[in-house]
Length: 88
Image (cartoon, rainbow, N blue to C red):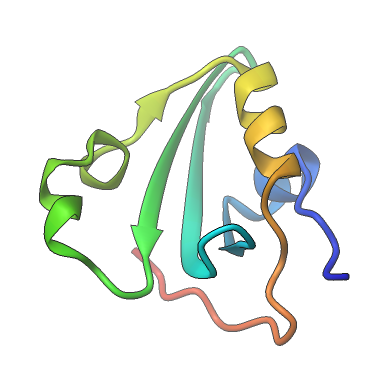
C-alpha cells in the first residue's frame, strides 16, 4: 500500500504529487496558507480534461477548512515513484 499524504507534508512542501486510488488519476495539490489560519488548495491535473475548464479547484486556489483538507488527503495516496513538481 502506498503511504498517505499528510497535511504537514503538504504544508512543508507547498505542492504534493498524489494519486486518487478510486480513479487512478494523478495530480498535484498546491497549498497556500495565510498566517497558519486560512488554507486554500488547487488541483493541477497531470492530464488535463475538458471538464477541468469548469472545475473551480483546477482553475484557482479555493479556501477550505484544514479539517476538510486533512479528510481529503486520507483518501489519496502518494505515487510509488516520486516525480518532480514543476515550479508554477
